[in-house]
Image 1 (cartoon, rainbow, N blue to C red):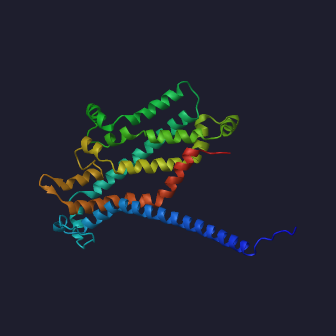
Image 2: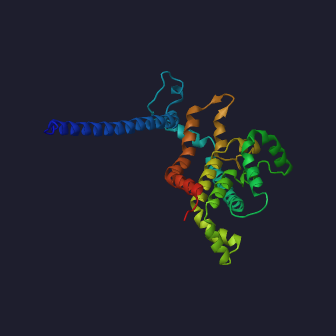
Image 3: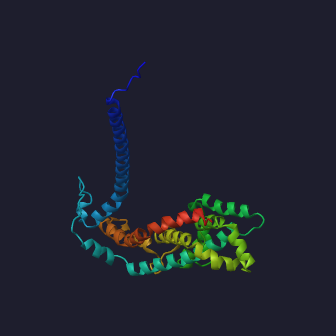
Length: 300
């Protein structure tokens, strides 16, 4: 019997089928990337539109604010910025905000570093209990504590002072948690080697822990700085004088019983938010790297 030979055209069909499968795979991958890009673009536009709308309102005339259909293109009425700047002591507000934010961040970093090290490295009884107790503070709504906190600050004669805006925020649950997770990820061999070299716990923290925890400390500091910069309700209730009030309280100047000056308010929002946005844009990569390094610890 003579063997039956395969037709010569079958290898060509196989090659064409392989090419079509590869083409479908590449086209599917490209289409998936395109769909993901469209979704990201739409989400980005939705998040960026409020900022764009504030910018448009800040350069339009007061009569254009309530026009329908609205004006989506920015105007050229820059006098809103001049009037907004003249409407409040902004230099004083900026200095107060920088002072409050800086001191708050410094205190919170120190307390978070010490508490995170104690809960992550040191071994003592009921360590887990204290950690759960610290985390439970996140479950208490801040609104519930406003009246008791006001009474405490009044008894301390701290109302309308800087310390009323700094000391209550000198410890951060977020900072304690993040640094505790970082110290839990440290190799035990590193800690034992430091103990064999005669390093005390504070010496290990200062010479080894702090340099390794710099990304996490930067993340916590940036997070707390932005939170202190954007603080409104607490200083609005606890202070009454522009001499100690921050920027966000100064924005309330444009709200009144006779109406809201939307164009001037939008202009003030632009030049008070711009510093934080610039800092965040330049520091966002370090912020992400800090969170990753803090949650993963140091391996090897």
